[in-house]
Length: 297
Length: 256
Image (cartoon, rainbow over all chains, first blue to last red):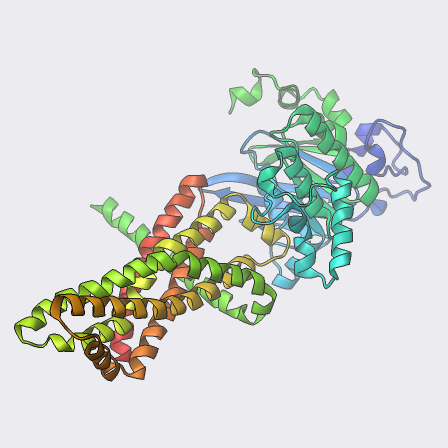
């Protein structure tokens, strides 16, 4: 069964079922905005931007994803947390069609990207921007050319228009003056920001972040978190983060899904995670060395 | 015993899968050739790298190949008093065999290994995945320009190698066997038919295509970090060397 906010939202806020809480409005603990709504809450839940249906994948004989089902709504920011090897990055790769599941499906805006033709897959990818863990910038190109690449390859734009859009996106990530540099000349944090500028250059509806704060100092990590929030505020995108960094997950997410051994063991709002008595969740979010995660590795 | 058979079976299956992948890659790259105009700049950059970067090595290889052929053959021919036919043998040998094969073996070591390492590094650092996510076909973006550049560079470098090799052979014929340069060249011109030139260049074009597609295929299948890139580079050179020699035999058999 696919879990939607309707399954957990009443526990999270104890709101009457005819009150809609926009995922974006849940970003912090501010008062939710009540809208007049029909009796059926479910009928008004926005269509999922991404749906994972019973996603199962084994790599080298090891089950990495074991029947993961999840719906990520339009406009929400979902963090997927879990230990190393829990299947977080594999989940992201399935969403963009870089991996094919052994069983199950992934729908992006209703299109099953695991079982579609090349054209539909391209159309689905057109809606997605992907920030890789290691940035994955093309080392042979300058920062400017990296960001301009999707425009040059897919859109018939004049050089002036390309320049305008690249400078706008580099400006959004605070790197307007670094376009001439090559990736080898910039820091890890700057690379992540260039990766983000490249991911948003074609104004995607969905942005996927693979460990956006990994390997960064706390200040740079905080800068990246601010950028993620900015993207949501300014562009209204749906975001999926894969992260170990709980401070980042709590800060930017509307909802958090915890993966363990290829299964979602907990899905809820940041507040629910903080308040959880589940020893698995507590050990993970507080980074304790003793607990069920380490007893049953 | 059974374990050895099972290992051999796995190796055979992997080899067949690799050959299938490489052939499919070639067909997909060939399918993008009409889009060469959009990759003109990258293709020219690769062409520049292949030709100018390989000139010194091809020069040395071709010069000494021509000289060795002339020296070895001349010693045998001297026993029969036929040193004057050296021009015939060296020219034919260079244009049909030595020029194409040695040039392409050099290119496999120089350029093929570079391609495999470049693309392998891009693969393990997720740059290839990034291209796919941006809906940029890595075959169009990475493989097609390299395929065209190396195929053309191999032909151009073989012409250059033939000239250098024949010149080297002529110098040895003059110095060691007292064969007049004019006689050497005249014999060479008389012996050489258009089929020898075209056949040699056709071979080298096919070898160039083989080297680039094998290198790109190995690079795209690299995994496991830097060690994986190293393995891909090694496999690229070894497979290219073997295929050049196998294809050389088959093409020689078909053309002449």
